[in-house]
Image (cartoon, rainbow, N blue to C red; front, side, top):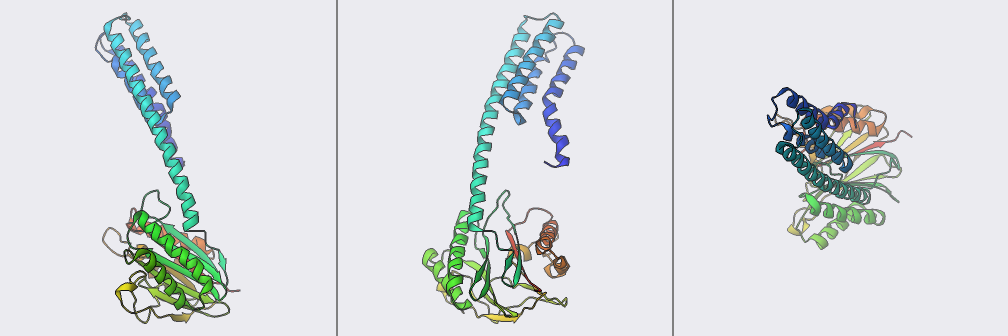
Length: 353
């Protein structure tokens, strides 16, 4: 809990006592029999919002005790209004206890679901290696769904015999179906990245896996990257995915576009041109930023797209993960609120050594 949240937490703890204190003062300054004693039930009612069972029951008993003491002080102990007030406090306390039990049960279920989500994240989006061949790697993932850790974006880095191979992709749709599709693509990529000699063959393996399992029901825009061992170039295979941002050591930037645009993975059954591998120089000191359209299509309140090329200065940080975190923070600030789509970023930095 942050420092800013401590005053609010203390206020919630003190609220039941403050309310009962106000009722006591009001009862003392108003004429006898004015009818405020039943308001003492507000104490256990507010206690049930944040407290546990013991605290709620304790405050309820304290409220009944206050009713008795106030009645004794003005000589009305044994009157009907005192019984009604006490029964009201007891009834509200019982209801508050029931609400506490239900809330604690839901909290336990939510904690269980979150722990399962953590496991699913480690299985689906495994931590990428920070050093992969000639590359230093950093990753950032921001889900558009509140509290979610995973969604329809995917990424993976594999050190294969021919070099380092990378995939980043965006599944059409959202929810569990998108997660299942992402798992299918990642599983096929992790196996084929070690077996296929050429990047084009790797792409065909992914295409067949989707066609066999999904039968054209869903598709995935994806970008495959290969940095061969000992080479100073990066080879791309683009399946309808946004072009990467290449930031060179000399300060120039570009977005390497494919020679011809191809359909996303999963739509090959509908025809269209196959993707063609293309290579660009990639030397020590250069950086490749791979991203999904949740980054490039993020808009501010005026509808302006996120100016990714103008934020290249963030990538100058010596720590690639810190550089990516600065970029992610700026992206969220640009959107001025929750992102409307998942945003995944993968930074590949060619090591000087």
